[in-house]
Image 1 (cartoon, helix red, strand yellow):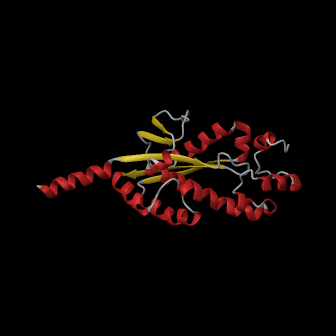
Image 2 (cartoon, one colour):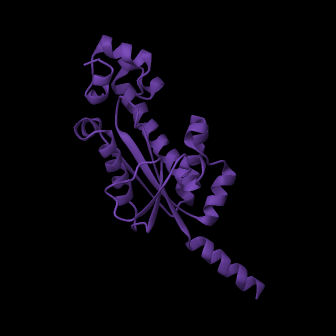
Image 3 (cartoon, one colour):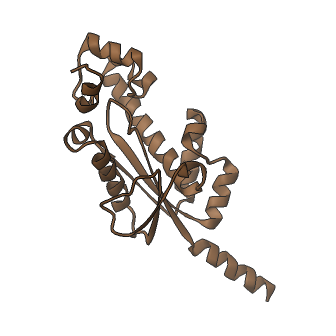
Length: 205
């Protein structure tokens, strides 16, 4: 009887799915914004917590890269989406970020019954149940996992783009508007992957 109870509990744990979503690169002045959605069972959330999954900003690049395959292996499903610098300039950063999130969600095999989203902003195009969690990446393992998936995916792309655009120290600044990056734009000009709408605010256009 005890074994049956434990088995039922185990099955229940495997059925409870948490779907977390997070974005990365929102404040960058170069390249796309990325989003990831990660679906986890309660059981696998505990395992990932033991592995050290937490807010990607609190982890070293090396640790994030080590955790990525574990997250992908233990997730019931995951999706990655992005929105380009051109889309950001055309639509604005909030709409473009939402677009990257919807693209990530569309890659999931099943539409989630409920989403938990990092940050205060509603995902307006989503017609299902959603909860906004401030600092969600340090409170929910699914959001923390999504933040790691999005961050490593974006960093891998930035690494490749840095070779294509060598005059901007892109890999060092990850496309963010550091003083050094802005001075290199003044010297070398704007690439087609720079977000012109962001650079207008910096008076570089």
